Length: 485
Image 1 (cartoon, rainbow, N blue to C red):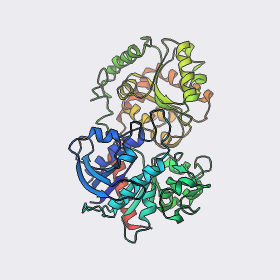
Image 2: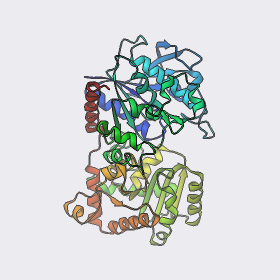
Image 3: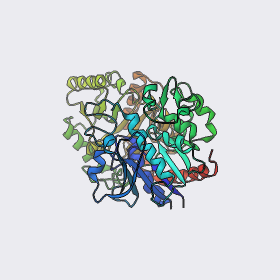
Image 4: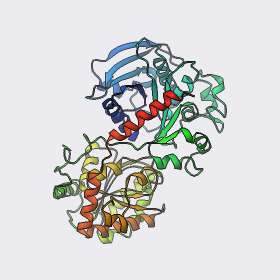
């Protein structure tokens, strides 16, 4: 058994904006089931405190930058027995907006200060200076918001091992020098070999430079971020640390994402009862205003409307396919220009194209259950969860070959169709033409009913549960403890 403190800015069900929250909500329980002594530490956002009852005050800390004492509260992660420590600093986290941005979608101007306070509190507890009488052997930090933790712990003569996980290297937590000067941090952190980054200060470098081991969320992404094309200016540092860089695929919480026991969808089904997928198809067509057309290839999309996700390619890619009977059910939010183009597409193709903007967890489940294919034309994708969910729902993924998509979808070709291992359509080029051709290939495959059903069944029987990934993290923790830098 290892004592592990998971430091993250979000963890489902208490706080979530995307994949980070999904992962940090599921991984702790999987680690606990592997015999680890796990605790999670979260910022005390207003939404977190509103969800928790019977919060217990464990400690009170004095933290630089915070104008008030910081309380450490305790709850559990949803219905699990995983303890959650909450860094309660109302001046930093008790706000009406989102986790990182205000109600108008603008990043909080003091995000650097907010997460400095959070990281300082994590360090105090990691060093058992909060009076909890529990000290982790490993601190597992996630994304830029926690990057200061390895940097500050590295200054301690005796300390826990540290692991830093990159969920998306494009988000570096970069701030100007003037902001750094307000953070009351050691001056030597602002140096090229430390956390200085092209004349700015990047939280992510604290993790990349100082953590004992660095992980990311798929083996392919671990290779990609060591290239100038994908490394966002950090590729040289990552190549330098390549021996300490590990790619571990994210898992899926099948207690939530499984059509055999999903209470949200119209009809439950599994690989042996795929005919029960049809009522879900009719339900999503009816609920979104699409025609109830059995012959149409129904495309599902649940995504951020962002350049990374390739959503700007949709209008041009689908333009030649509307006449062939495709339908689109889309759920997403993000770039205003992309949203405007999708709205135009819906007006021009009523009954064929339907979109809802924002996020609706129930609708995401219903789209996965009702669609024929699930589209992910990402320009880069560290891991991706949608394609993992889609395979369990018998919804064939159509994805670009990148990152975790390449690692988790077995491409359709003559060989994989013959041996029954194919699970989806993969294409190469980042272009509307390549995306259109991939959708067309899926349309032709669907007309070959036996092959299509085999694709669905093979995908549904794949196991992306957290067990194997959690065991890989347990080994990473062991290595971090042994090889403290």
